[in-house]
Amino acid sequence: MLAKLNELYSSRCSVCGGYHNLPSLNDHGLDPALNKLVEQLAHDLYYQKVTIGYISHDLYSYTADKLLQSLNKGLGAVNFGYDEDLNALKAFMQFDIFKFSAAKSMAEMEQFKALMLDERGKLVDFNTFKNKVLQAGYSFNKTHLQTEFNTAVTSVLMAKRWQNLSTTQEYLQYSTAHDDRVRPEHAALDGLTLHVSSPVWNTIWPPIDWNCRCTVVPGVASKATLSDAEAGRMGNFINPIFRNNSGKTKLIFKEDHPYYITANFKAQELDAVKNYGLKTPKQIFSNPKLPVIPLTETESEFKTLYTSLANNILIDQNGLSLKLSDDFEAHILSKQSEKRYKYAANVSDVIKNADEVWAQKKNNQLTTYYIKYYQDGAYVAISNIQNNQPVIDSFYKVTDVRLKELRKGILLKK
Image (cartoon, rainbow, N blue to C red; front, side):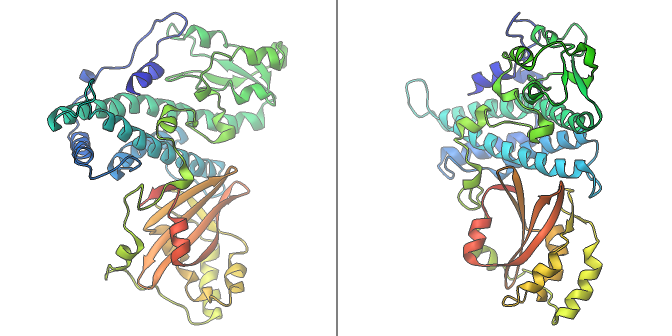
């Protein structure tokens, strides 16, 4: 897979073969933290302490933390006002980064395991294996991660650009960086002008390759001389990975990427214990230091507390701004058999101090689960995107069966 990634991420033009390649391993300085991380993975793989499908939390975090920096850089800030469109965009793109990081971690483990055998299919000694894994680890987590970072920044910037241009302009024009580093294929698109509603913008939208520096600017009707069909054919050269308008899809990395394919990635099936190596509920609840959840005795007491909560903006641990939904109070009070009003005022604590945050995406609907463990059980606050705003629309104590279901998907925090 590394050879495929080297070719894929290279800045060489497929037409002329020119321009620069990826940096070599010698271009990277020593990273003690990465060395320690990769050496531990090599040890655990070689001595069969972990299996394929396992997502190393350290490796997962190493990728996610770097790419979250690209998200913040592209968005221009870490936090946004609840009513800002960029707040919801952050939620979707943050999910995509964690999903990509999970797929990459699983793909890396596949690659590392393959290095155990020599060309004759014989098991190599541990030191040989460790050195091979270190070299591959630097390729994945220095050379390739930097290219992924650059691409993520551009994708986020262009998502913001779509949000702005699609609501203010009638025509858009494709534009390169206009210097001697522009790739010929990209240069051929320079000046392409189409109506903002053209479906061509679904697939011809920067970045259209790794380290692409193109952009889109306001256009004029007089330059829109091509039909959608003619314009669309101009982008036939674009790798399917990049046939994406990040502003529309809210995706940075499509699932055409080799990481997803190598890992046979199925986000919905990722399990807290099996894949992420987290503690079982039994292990979690054996901890005597778990907090006691404060309770309110009456509905009126809850209503009083809710009044102060209703208009508060809650900031989660990843910097996302959320509010309680308009019908949150009515929803809680309707659950009379469960008496949710007794503990529902703790929703703020769960959002701000969740022990685990999980997310699942179905049919472009993003749902986030904030889980906090107390002495008497687990509680979850559930958030969805409604009218392009993240709202908390449910909060309840979780049964053992439901807890297992919720601890699946993409882990945003532990």
